[in-house]
Image 1: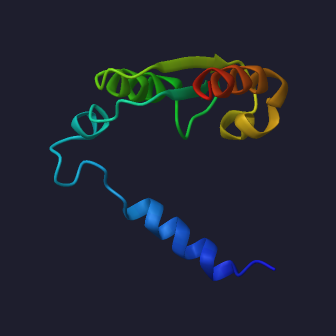
Image 2 (image 1 turned 90 degrees about the vertical axis):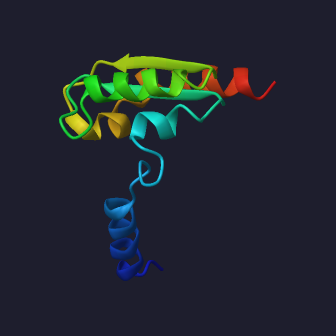
Length: 101
């Protein structure tokens, strides 16, 4: 049901994408976003560490939109967002409920 080649193409596209291209920096690109965003960090994530997630949230805030920034305590590293559903779920539900009004 799933073509493994599509996964390879998707991964390559994500690896090659550069949101700063033509915009000066990633901060400049993100500051153009004025919508609502939820940035959730996993305390033990070493692939996308919390300090980078804070930077992401700060850059998104420059656009003037609403940015919720939450930290999920989990010993599970990057997979924490998949495994800590009891901790992440309420934040996601609250966020979605507040932006869909």
